[in-house]
Structures are given as structure tokens and as C-alpha cells.
Length: 401
Image (tube, rainbow, N blue to C red):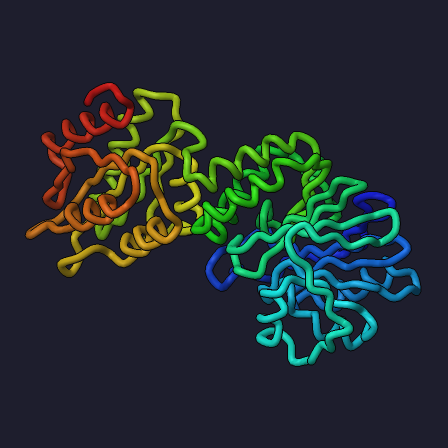
């Protein structure tokens, strides 16, 4: 991806990666990922973050094009995760007179990520509300600890009102020849699916920290949001901020049902399908069914946060749960799943315990209302189970209490 203009003075110099299969070695990225980096060109030149080592060559090519023979004055470090810090050392070797701009926590952590000793005269330590004058452009720094690492900060350029939001407002997916969210078809709604999956799985555990950052930026007039992954956001910014408010406060976005099942021989899958049929017959709300043995776990988790109702359908396996169901429950707990209605369907040919284990896992979550009458299946769904599933559908749709 070549250099692209955000404005006459603010340039995008990031790069796509369409060869990566798993982001953070766990999240499928069939559409690729971007490693975003930005340059402000004024009387002084500032670069905002480096990129993953997988994108080293195109990034340096973009920098050379952006600099037009000049040397950068500053390298701003918003976040030290390797997909954004991997080229700090190479950058300093090529541009040794650059001043590194970071907060105290970032400088304390920096030796974990680079082997080059940065002399004190090449360090600019910034704190909350400090500013950096580049000429006609002024950059203001705001600390964002635990969004989602402790050293994170964001930057706000005062004259053009651009928020450089670190991993905040990021999303999966490569950009190709696009840059702005306005250039991507189906936006902003289509942005939400991959942004939700990104947020819930990567940043979602740290909702209170995100809320603290949102409170800070709410006082700003923002024209564009420039994240470290995904497109630059502009226009309808209230849409994106509202999504972040809901995600970070763990509130459902809309009414709907996720049915997540783990089935050994297909009988529990049939129960999940029967419940889905009953629900779809009684509502226009979305009803999404996931086979936990095969589904992208990050997608199931994200969808569970999107809707206000969740059904777990699991089988007793070796006196416990199938590993895929255990993994799903682990992810829900780790990402602070809460404020939902939930129900349990269990299956066991003898000595069923799956229902208790799933119910106990839900009971450990905050403000999750669990249906009292779990459905217990003994191997195959019978007429009694079908009636119970219909009753469960009524409860989920508030047609029966």
C-alpha cells in the first residue's frame, strides 16, 4: 500500500499484511490486517509508530516517499506491542538523529523491545496533556493505560482535529488501495463486524479503561480517527463512538440470540436447531447458531456480546464438558461477559453433569439472568424435550416467564 493523504500535511504510511493467518496467533484474519503508521509534515516531521516486522520493507519505502529527502525529527510511540514497535531499532539506525517521544511507562518498557540504548538527549518524555509543537500543527498527548497495555497513549492534533487512537477503533482486515472508512463499501455498518471481533477479543477485557479514555476524548472536537489497524474513520463518528460505548460497558447492541453448542454425535446439534426453529417462528430478531467444534471462537464470542441472549447447549464428556465448550466459557469470563439473559441445554446418556457445569460458569458472571428450567436430554431429543425447548424459546422472547 502506497503513501496516502489524510490531508495535505498528514500522511498514511502503513502497510497491509495479507499473508498472516492468525493475528496474535489465535484470531483468524482471512481478510488480512493493516499495520498503520502516520506522518505529520510541518516545519518539523513526526512519525507515529512503526509497524510489524512482516511489513518492514514497504513501510520504509513509504517513509522515504513521505519524507521527500528530509529527515524525521520525532518518532512517537503510542503502543509497544510488537506489531507496532518491531521497527524502532531499524528506524533509529536509518535516522539516528530522531527524538523518541513516549511516556515514562513506555520508556521503562522499551528495553524489552529494542536493544539500542537511546541517549537522554534523544528522549522526550511526555505526560497527560503535554503538547509537541511541529509548526502549524500541535500534538496533544493523553494517557490511555490498559487500553490494552499499560504504556498506551493516544495523540490529538489540534489544528486538523485528528485523533491518533492507538489500538482503539482498530479492526481486522487489509485496506488495499482504500484508506478512509468512507471508501469502503457498506460502511459504517460493515466496519462494525470486524471492529467488534477485534475489540471484544483483544481490548474487551479492559472496558473500564476504555470508558476512561472515551470520557477524555468526549471533550474534543474530532474530525477523523486514525487507529493502528484498519481504516481511518471520518463522518458519522457518533456511530463508531456509540459502538465503543456499548462494547466497553458490556451492553448489548441489539436484541438477538446466540445458540452455541458442542455436540458429539449430532443429537445436541439437533436440539440447538429445534430451538432455533422455535425462536425464528416467534421473532424477527437475529438467531445465530454456532458449532463450537468448528466455528471461529473469536466470532462466537463477538456475536455473544452483540446480542442480549445466549444459549449454551453442551454434552457431558468424560465427566465434564467438551473442550470447545470449556474454551468458550473461558473466553466469556476473560472478556467480562455480562448483562445478558442465558439458558442451558445439556445432554448426557448417563450421569449428565454438563448442565451444572455450564450453569455454574454462567452464575460466576456479572448480571447474567439464567433460565431456571434447564433442558436435559438423554441422548436423543424426545417429545418432552421438544416441549421444553418451545417453553425455553418463549422465555427468551419474553412470551413466558
